[in-house]
Image (cartoon, rainbow over all chains, first blue to last red; front, top):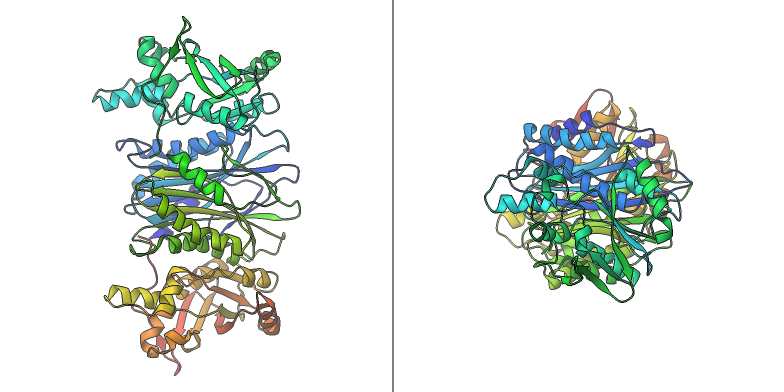
Length: 314
Length: 314
């Protein structure tokens, strides 16, 4: 039965010129451009942990690829290929077709070829490895932030956490908020545009403060974030600031890019993002400072402390 | 807690000169040699499906990497890097340490660097992506078998299936047999030695007849296997032929290489394998024929039919 599933996947997967051999052998054969470094990210989504049990198969497919493309984006890489390992409680062709609808829709958007993987029996789990390329020396890393750098974030924060909070309270979440939870937008073009400009970058998957904390730890710096400056979508802006700040500062699943850049490059940042994919918004939300740890500040200058530090994996 | 686990993994993982950036950022940064193709395999092991529930953590770690290196071996590739996605019911440092003992022991044996991945909460599941290199045009594929080619298999077949059968019958399995189930040997050096000699290759993970069937389907040929020629280990040779043939012909989990080569290259096959890693044995077990499907023949010439066709993934 595995082979029926694999045939179904292979029949729908697109290919690329640099795929010498795709789905159907023991491994994929691929040609990396000689003047590029290979960038490899791997992330798993487990049912009930990384997506609500009622999530549509197509949304699971989209999200499983999106979180991996988001990791490539945070490195400034151009996505190329992915492999997929799908554990399913039973072989379910309708579910698989829905899953592939979402997965392959996002893959096509970024020209990504699905080149291999496996299907196995087990509790629902989706593991994806994404491969991309970056010019040597231009990768965005976590360890390049410098004292005095601006801290920026693309798009808006907190929608996914607000949707999850509504769901947990037994309420119907706003459709725009729920869409951010189910179909996050990997900021691939923004990441490409920022390569060579940003000094450090990470994608916001565990919560802004936690993820920015990783940048600070890797860079040996501290950071100060203006909590009022955190960008909110129109749907989220309807909530009181004190209610939405925790979602924006500590909610996971936004998959925006948090990056740092020298203050002298503000115009370059704005211009590069304006040119990327029809324009990606970004907000300046704070400063890299000496010391360690991330401090969030209220408008009047007092320290704001969230009740929770971000998504905990265990 | 994810970060404690990741730090524990990072502290023990070895690196290589071609790893620009390993564990600890959003993705790994890697340098593929300009004159090589990239080979990528991905396989998942789920508890209770791919290993018995009583399997030691170190054996799970070994096997999770071994099955992936076996896929690279079947392509004739030289392993280089891997990523690991580990889903665990809870963060358990002792279990993780045991797991890493086995995983990293095998990685060190083949000079493989663990460069990334993730750890998540969920039912016990281990997903590995293995990366290797092969010279352009020398990859071993499934689709190159030709009428008249010899069919070969490395090592011996059926030990893992015999161990599993004993376990299912509630018996204690022979230690030598159980070791083959828990710690399969990926035939990396044999695969490298056969690149440029073998016409087609696959690793025996689902059972010889099933896997040889994939070679035949991809190559547009049939095959005839002499069931008496299937090589047995000393531990397995103690069983009656009629009892061990099903394990040898249809048991999965052996991770030997089944390959084809022109009859005119018999001496090259033997010489190449004798030179590989202190010598790898191989047995000639049949012939590629016109037609389709795999036919197993008893010593007296009648067709031998197994009760089961091989490991079923669903």
